[in-house]
Structure formats: C-alpha cells, structure tokens
Image (spheres, rainbow, N blue to C red):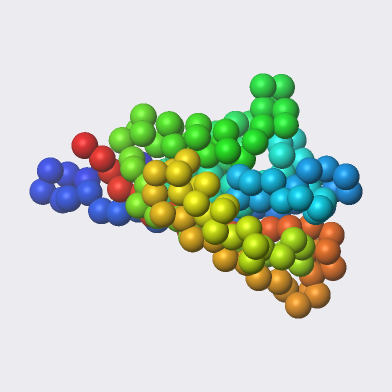
Length: 166
C-alpha cells in the first residue's frame, strides 16, 4: 500500500465488492443483516448474506486489506454458519486497527426474491449501526436474465468510501 508523504494529505479511498450465492430451499434468508421471513436463504459456508459479503469486500478493497476470502478464509470451522453481522463487525474492527474509518457504503441487491421494499429501511438502519456510517441499500432484478433472473440465486455489488483516521 502506498502511503501519502507528509506533504501529501491522505485522500479518501474507494472500494468495490461483489458476492453471489445460489438459493437453498429451506435455509433461513439473511439479507443485509436481517432475517427475511418466508423466503429461502442462500447456500454457503456462512449465512449466505450476499449484501453483507459484498460490503465486506468493498471495505477491504478500499483499505487495501484484501477480500473476504483472505479475511476469513474458506473452510475455517470457527466461521461455519457465520453471520453477515459478525463479518461486518470484524471488518470494522480490522479497519480501525489499520486506522481507517468508514465514510459511507452503497450496496445493491440483484435478485427476484424477496421483494425488499418492506425490509430496505430496517436492513440499511441495521448495517449503518454496525458500520457507524450511512448505508444505502437498493435492489433490482435482471428482468429474468441469468441465474438471478431465473430465481436460482442472489447477488450484490457494493461501493465503500473509507478515510484514514488519526
């Protein structure tokens, strides 16, 4: 990571993250750190929260600290079934250890189900509280194209802004 010189002030840093998972019938559905009732969740080593995972990737990228795979690894028993909430909390702690604070996050869910209008504010509020920063959550579909359009999975893309802190 290139560090600014004393004559060069620290600039904000931006990162982008992406995640996708297949839908798994009967698994609880977590999106944006809240449980969505009456919807099937996503498969995975964790709770399958594509929104939280994309945000972690974006935050780590912005701080130059790798990605979700390098952060928690794959196949580590202590992360079996890990929640998106825990991943965000641990990511915030890691950023703080490296003297970064979060400016804001924008994340978009790409999925046919569930319809997020009824849950958007609750999810954004929950994630904002975890990150100590504003989070905007939006949702879209792919108009029946691809695996998300066929209802086979969900994806999310996130952008995060971080600042070096004193």
